Each structure stands twice: as C-alpha cells, then as structure tokens.
Amino acid sequence: MANMVNAAGVNSGRAAIFDLDGTLLDSMGVWDAVDVEFLGRRGFDVPADYMQKVSAMQFHDIAAYTIRRFGLDDTPEELMREWNDLAYEAYTTTVELKPGARAYLEWLRASGARLAVATSMLPSLREPAMRHAGIYDLFDVVVGTGDDGSSGKDNPVIFLHTAQLLGVKPAHCTVFEDLLTAVESAKRAGMHVWGVQDDSSAMHWERICETADGVLFDFTQAPRQLT
Image (cartoon, rainbow, N blue to C red; front, side, top):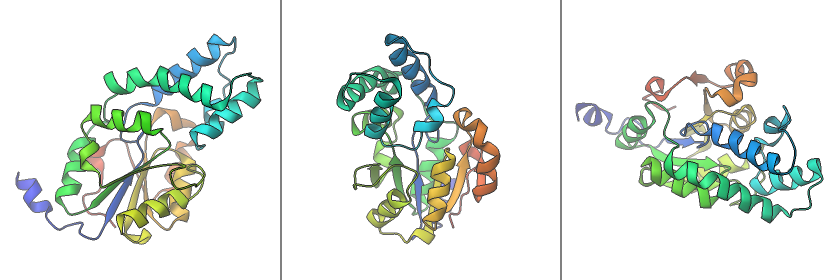
C-alpha cells in the first residue's frame, strides 16, 4: 500500500504502451506449437526463417504469405480460423504473465499513467488472453494492427494511433516491445522504447539493445518514472 501511495501523480500526463505476445505474456511458445501442428498437418516442417518473416505482419498478411510460400489451397480466412482454434485453448488456460508484469501495471495505474496494449493478436484471442491473465481491466485502450487500417508492427502508425486514442503526445509515451521491427517502429514514432527479452527474439537481441533506450529481462526491472 505504501508503494502505491508513493506512486500517486508520478506519471501524470504520461503513457505506457505494451505489446502482448512475448512482452507481457510468456506466450511465444504457443505460436511455435501452432506452426508445428498446422504445417505438420500439411506435410511440412517449419522453416528456420518462418517466424522471422511473419513476426511483424498483420494476421491476414501472415495467412496470405503462408498460402503463397507453401502453395496451399486454403483461403486466408480458413487459415486464420484454424490458427485461432489451435491457439485459443493455450491463451485461456496455460499462458501466464511474465515475472513482475501485474505488479508493474498496477503501479503505473496508481502513478497516474495511461495504459494501452498495441498488439498483432486477433480480438478473438487478445481479450480472452488478457482476461485469463487478469489484466484486461487495467488498460485504457487496446489496439490491434489493422484496427485503424494500418499495416503491422513494422509501421509506426499503430503506435501513433494508440497515442492519439490515449490523448498523450508521442514524446510522452513509453513503449515495451520484444520484437526488433516493433522497437524500430516505435522509435520512428518518436517514443521512448524499452526492449523486453524473449527467447523468440534471441537472434536480434544485440540489435534490440543497440536500438532501444533500455532493456528488461523482467518487469521487476522496469522504470517507475516514465519519460
């Protein structure tokens, strides 16, 4: 309680924007399993570069890319439904928050910060996953790539759109991301960026460290005062 009292007003006029997969949620293994199952059903192994190629895309674009790459007869909508079904159970039963995430979100709210999620996850997955983790009601805004007609996380538009919805200038927004492309986009949006370590981004960790304003291995290390 004392920590929450001390937080009052510290971050008034500031905002924090969080990714979900691999940042707040310890969930990237879900998509590794989905890829193995989905492509295995069609007689394919998962190529080593597949996750890197699709990581910053919108969900529909990933489906279209997958159809082209593997010569599938499915429609993008059919692929997305199958992926959704494969992932839904994990997100609503087993996926949990990364260490320190809930306490940090609660502290930021108590400090007066506005909070948002900016994610590539479909609405059918992101809200159930957030409710399972017990964090849905902590956020002022939840935005997905494509909600505003923008492209994926390789475009700063999603971060600028989120800041606009929050009513906070980009320079007063702090972004938490685990993907290099998203870190780069948030920087281009004029925001302060923290890179969050996740095994799925290991090959880009050195560049994330070079590009971001700071890096975290868990949220117990996260900044109490936002820029």
